[in-house]
Image 1 (spheres, rainbow, N blue to C red):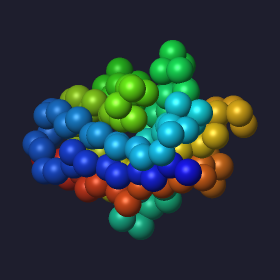
Image 2: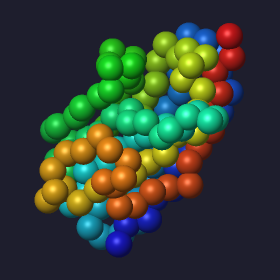
Image 3: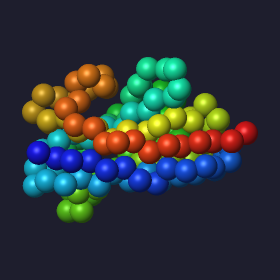
Length: 125
């Protein structure tokens, strides 16, 4: 089983950048699709981006396209989310999540099996 720990959150001004990282433990990391989700106060958790097990397949939410880049390094058991041109509305807790690749790509939080504890991203105007 894979365990996930996020890092890299913080406070940044609008227009700035942050790189989130997700460290995964477990020998089966490369068998999982890895996603990033976020949850703002009083809002539902929403999909940000996902990268397939081979790192060759990525998919983004509309708000993330052109600003965020998801990547993974299977040799290091790491997933990253590079966020550029950040906006105040990007403020949220960002979560890393894993879904067994066999079941296919998903953007639905309830279809992911494993979650990290989250990292806070705050974008000031």
